[in-house]
Image (tube, rainbow, N blue to C red; front, side, top):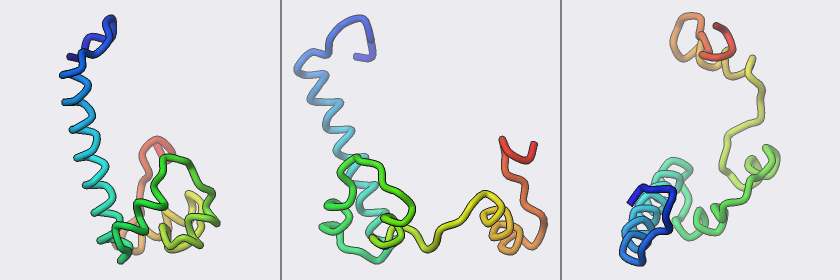
Length: 90
């Protein structure tokens, strides 16, 4: 398994899909817990498509819309010191 030059065997595909399902189930549970939603609601929202900020806000997946300056300000307040955003500020 892991050789990109050959197709997965049925056994390898079964193992890989099992791992993907475990990761997906963990993701759904973490979002449900963090956003105070049911796993059924999160599953309906997490179909693999991307969503715009306003849609994510309406669906309760984010708290508010903002930009990198808003993030920097939020983090600086939480940290009690100036925040540095890697890849942007350095």
